[in-house]
Length: 235
Length: 235
Image 1 (cartoon, rainbow over the protein chains, first blue to last red):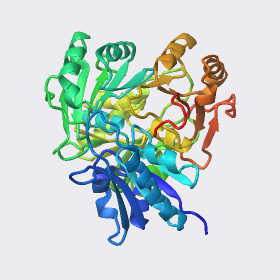
Image 2 (image 1 turned 180 degrees about the vertical axis):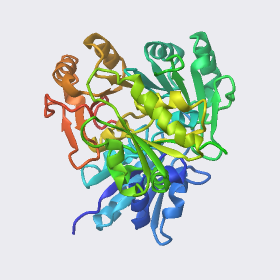
Image 3 (image 1 turned 120 degrees about the horizontal axis):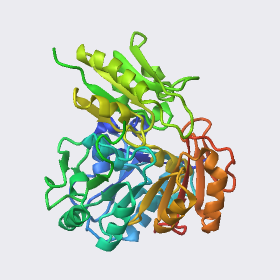
Image 4 (image 1 turned 45 degrees about the vertical axis):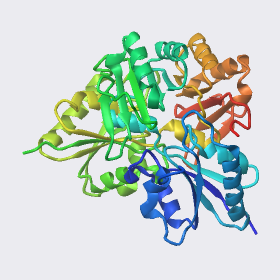
């Protein structure tokens, strides 16, 4: 019997309407669906496509403790991969949901390295958070011949400062508790007026603010975009 | 009478199935649709959603001469904005199609600067080429706490080399005639084995190759992704 196919499916930033047609159709047809879930509360990736999931689908939640700055235990992904692999061995396709895009800072990659050699894998890209946050701001992510650099907020000030200085456009990911530090850093670089803060892009609780307006206690799923070009940025 | 709304709609990388549900629904409902088109041949953005366009829709093609290295004349966008503005003034919504994502190196921004002050604008993000090319390769775009830098191939060797050296992951856009130079540059940096070439991501004519396999005459819509992490890149 032929093995099933593993579909790594990006669900986009949060609005079910920003799921691609292909991802939606795969979820509607899926007999087996896997997704990461926090140890308390519901899976964000699952919630985005909940309407499309068949009532009789087999669901494989992978419980990933959400603690900032700590890599989740390998055993969680080992166990998830084994459970997914058992379905694939039995000839059943598995749709693995990934919030945003599977290959853009996604936990999908933990499963991909475990399963890629044994099974056919198809990846369905999703709208990533870069594009979602730029849309929320109606402001360029990057234009013309600009250089865009994407930086995790966990980098130290020296590394962030140097990278920000060199780029034309910057996205700082995973803001969380780093906001006060980032605000000071961007202010020191004279870029406070060009920095925009977005959280929960595309969801009803989306906030698209200037850096000045941004809260000090930013959520993990938030981003600062800096576009250095003068307004009008293109003509 | 209230003015119409301008929708800047990303159509994704090329596969009509990779259009978001919202973008597809907006096109299906649209009475007025605008899009960039080359001076010969069909509009790529239009082709992606052609199936969804109403037969009675008013179409506004904006003919943009496709000559590498030359900014299209402002007059094209002035004229397009005037034509779109006339519909908005008459209370009709206009769906402006953008291949990929509107705010990621998109020509949509030329219209946005011309129309944003006079009309309500809603931007619908699309799957951008970063995510599409990573999916084609089934290889990380960026993971963990990596820094990703996006570079236009038009930069000179010194600028490219320095940026590539500093980043953990690199995307080089708009390859075209720069391929032989990029191949030499990446080889000199010892990164040839980590560089992957993708053209026409998600389309039937997609090519997802190693750098060695890549053609010297690359199309404009092609990308090199470099992920420096060792395989397995995540565990």
